[in-house]
Image (cartoon, rainbow, N blue to C red):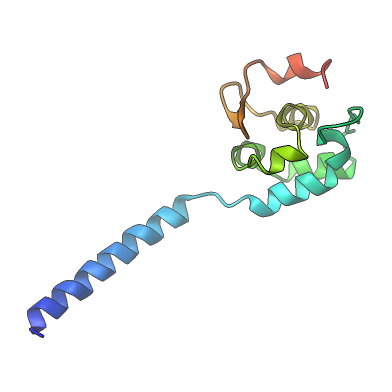
Length: 122
């Protein structure tokens, strides 16, 4: 194989790797945060049953405070939504001081109203 062709292949591979790596560096990884919120806030964000109001300082709110809730909502899957209510998740985020802005997606649901308007609804 010609040295020139090999050099072109190596340069192409190097450029491709650099571009792919740059994209990965730019993405926020909050999967661990999502799992923590889902575990520690499960009584407040579950689909069924009464809404359990989280209180500032409890383990749910402490976890929410330490999490990127916009990212957590963004990566909520349809599978997650079999057990987690996105509206309740937004409500919990608001209650714990990390509101998800209007217009952002939370799973398959888009936040349509300011989170304060959700306080009275499960």
